[in-house]
Length: 73
Image (cartoon, rainbow, N blue to C red; front, side, top):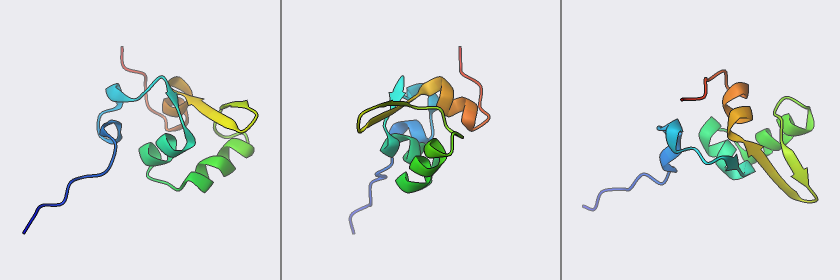
């Protein structure tokens, strides 16, 4: 029987591999939440994001800050 591969991005377990700018989908994977939850929290002002038209990006420092995690040096 073939083994199932883990389909989660590598940064879910290793935040040092987290990109500088995250998409909504990447933030959702990191939080283990839905994309709609991330969008709702951005709209409510709970997560800081850069919005340019329909493009939404979340800075790594803002993602880690929202989750109460420290940026690794």
